[in-house]
Amino acid sequence: MKRRNFLIGATAITLAEFLAGCETQADLKIQLLKNTIPAQMVSKFRGELISSPKLSFQPQESLSGLFSLLQSWQRKLLSEKQNLSTNKTENIDIANLVTIGDYWLANAIKQELIQPLNSEALPRWNKLPKKWQELVKRNNQGYVDTQGKVWAAPYQWGTTLIAYRVDKFKTLAWEPKDWSDLWRPELKGNISLLNQAREVIGLTLKKLGKSYNTKNIDKVENLKSELVKLNQQVKFYSSENYLQSLIIGDTWLAVGWSNDILPLVKTRKEIAAVVPQSGTALWANLWVKPTATAETSLTEKWIDFCWKPQIAEQMSLLTQITSPILPRINPNELTSEIKNNPLLLPPQEIIEKSEFLYPLADNTIEQYRQLWREIRISRE
Image (cartoon, rainbow, N blue to C red; front, side):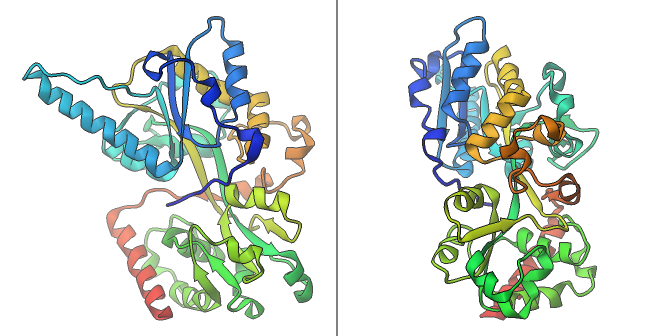
């Protein structure tokens, strides 16, 4: 799965000016996704500490790059173990925390790239909504397990949205509200969808009243026929360029990720967006602790800092990516910019109907892949 982040401007400036000395000498080293932590928040965090620790925040361009970084550290660790027998050692500088997307969590656990977190050392862990706690409780194979260990700390989340051209829909005299609207005949040839099997099959399952995480999809009545009909509506599939055609008016509607769409809605009046009423797919950015990283209490302090209500609000507004703490805050205590923005913080009833895309068993994944191939081939 790919998720891109548009540049957000001065509110999410680079963290270079906050790097304290050489990274190897830092007291807290974090490798994070670019533009997900505003530099102002790093300053506030340092200001709340009694000591003056050296902080190193290294932004990376992509989630896939951060996952590859975890893998490279593991390879170096294995190499170092082999070198011990030959009296050769390498200096491996491993970060204390790394950002990964929830999509990568299962593989990070299975490949032993990360270690569990101690939730008891996180004072605000119990403030997280149950949905986010369940997301990161996994067994050793990476599957969701309510009795599993806590393998990550969510610090941001978003949704899959429907974005659309306001001017085009004025001529239609209606606005999209839910997934079922994608099948309306007047939209034929005017839709772009993500090039993702789980997303497209998932929204079709949702239209049919099923879960994004349905296991035996070959037994879901009308699923294939509905996908065939949807495929006929689509102009093209893309996980990277789906908004460009919407901007120029070449398509009227696009399905995409909120971290792409929210900045666009703020700057372009001709584009609006909606969270599907029947529920949608959720995604999250997570803090994980690499295997064999140096222990420091600053790790837990940083995670808990991100979950402080006031900090969570500020970070959500600056990045336009929602903190998992927000759904648990009394709406009357939220700023109007958040409370009155259902794209940034959807209504609770929609959140309850929405789902993270959980890892599925190999045989189930093959069902999704096979169905996806059949639908795409039918288009050619």
